[in-house]
Amino acid sequence: MRQKRHKKNRKCLQFYRTHFGYREPYRVVVDGTLLRAVVDGPRPLDVLLRDVLDAERVTPVVTRCIMLELSRMIRERDRLEQGRSDELRRASRVARALRLERCGHEVGEWEKSEWSGARCVMDLVERRREQLKQPAEVRTLAPLVVASVDSALQDQLRALPGVLLVRLITGHGRFYLEIEEPPSVCRDAVQRQAYRQRRAPLSELEAAAEAAAEQRQRRRAGAPVDFATMRSAADDIAPAARSRERARCSRATAATTTKLWMDVRTDAMRSQKRRRAKGPNPLSVKKKKKQHGEPA
Image 1 (cartoon, rainbow, N blue to C red):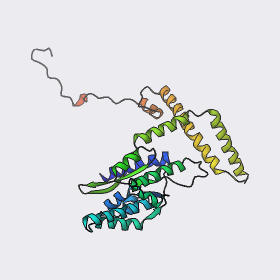
Image 2 (cartoon, rainbow, N blue to C red):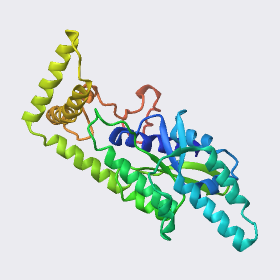
Image 3 (cartoon, one colour):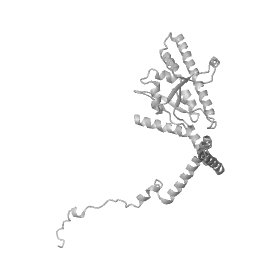
Image 4 (cartoon, helix red, strand yellow):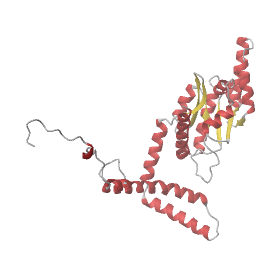
């Protein structure tokens, strides 16, 4: 079961790495609900995150709004339940030990009754997604991973394409983090991007190829090179080239094979003699007895 879980996590992580630019080191925004859930668990938070992301450089972070929310919940529980807030206090101590992610929200936001740590996380993720739309040469930030057990926040994050969501699985002796499978919004966004790249005009691809060739010549001559231009050209050319190569291979496969599940490499197998069921060895078969009255 553990091997199946790790295989599923690796598959989901590879999807986000390929299509949405997630790279190590990871920055994981941990909200108050997850801190309260793991504070009394058998394994610490950093170990759980390194295990689920299969990486050593993982940095759990919190925002100022999350810490203020925990403090407000401690005060409310102290007032209502006469000091029974040990779980929240332990979660607050763990949060203070984590790195602080600047969210840009002022203390005045907390004067609004509807403001919460979940809204802070949502606003932070949306602003980060807008910043990631900048050109690669001026982009300095990486996508954020969100770890939460708040079902309302999870539903809101699922509506945004490209957000890697980590959730906690507990019960029946289980206590581990799991990467949620990419929702349909993510898969639709990937398909639309692939379609746009396949339909790119040939003039744009040729211009990108010429720009990349010019930068390579400058590199051979020892002149300064704009690596961002080379990377963007490779990003533009590679998907179209791969799609054309797949189309060429599919046409070659259809011309050389008769079955849809076969490819070009199985042509040698077709020329081999098919093994069929053979009859019994005639030397080991008992001879037929002659019936009475038959001529000798």
